Each structure stands twice: as C-alpha cells, then as structure tokens.
Length: 213
Image (cartoon, rainbow, N blue to C red; front, side, top):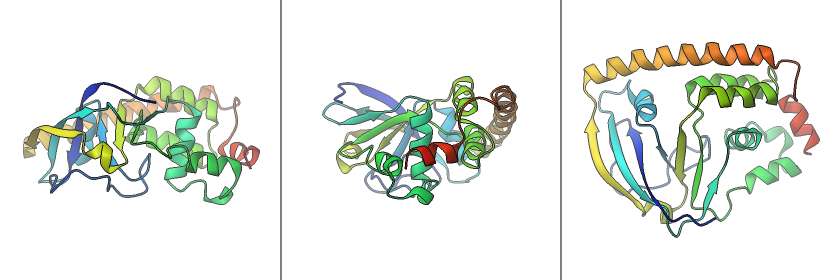
C-alpha cells in the first residue's frame, strides 16, 4: 500500500538519540526490530519515566513513497505480536507461523495499535491459554489503545525528522509514574471484567495455532 501523508509522532528514549535514526530496537518488540514511534505523546513518556536522562522527541514522518503495512486491531494484530515475541516457536515452519513471519516482507513501515502495559497483561493471558480470542479482541476495543508506527527499513528511517527534543525533569517523571500506575490498574480492571464476560466464547491460542498448522 502506498501512503502520501506527513504525520507528527512521538518517540521516548532512555538516554537520547545518538547518531542517525535507525531500525535497531531489540528484536522481541511488538512488530520486530525497528524504530518505534507513537501517536499519543503520553504513551512513550510512561515507558521512559524511570530513567534520569530520558528524552521525548516530537517527529515529523513523511510516509510518501513508503510501502506500509497497516494492521487493524484484532486477531491478526495479536498473532503478529505473538510471532515477534517468540510465542509461535512451537509451530515453527507451519502455515500460520510462515504467514506471520512473512507478513511484513517488502514493507518499510508497520502501523498498528500499541500493546501498552495494560494490554500486555491481557496478551500474556491469551498466550498462556487463560482467555480466548473473543475476550482478547473485546478487551482491545475497550482499552482504546494509541497507534504505533514502526520504521523497519533504513529508507523509512531517512523519512523521519526531529522537530523537538525535551529532557524530562524529576518532577515530570514522578508525575508520569503515578499516572502510569493509575492507568494500568484501571485498564487491567476493565479488561478483567471483559475477559469474564467472554470466557466461554471464542478459541484459545493453542487451538488457533493447531488449526493453522
């Protein structure tokens, strides 16, 4: 898919960006190795609030001439995260494994919802076989997650410009820690309620993997 637009995004760094922007995050991230940016400024802030040299960046990203995989919230989104976080190794080389291993081939940028720490708890329960895909998908919809844009090629990284860089004060970081904890507790409670409601509907993770072998 080709996309012709410029978007403003945010990136949080534990100690600041050094050198050129590059797709070099750790491998076990939601959409694999890349440079991660978000649509919601507060989301990356909550990830870096424990680090004294943390910086928040405002970025301009030109999506024209990039091949973009825009993945909607739902089961495919969860299974792509499962693949990238190493949760599909038990069915390596199966049809379902290969589908998600190759899903972003030829793409420069992946756009998809953020699995923040509230969602991470729900995703883990899904991967561990405690809740069904129906419970997961309905939790996703209720939590209203922001979107993340992940530049996975050098070409995409070259289209990112830094507009602003700010270092967080100790006071900022303390406030963010409190806000993050409150949001996390609220989100987990809401997801718990939804998971109870859908506990007998849908399929479990191992059933989905088995059906896709």
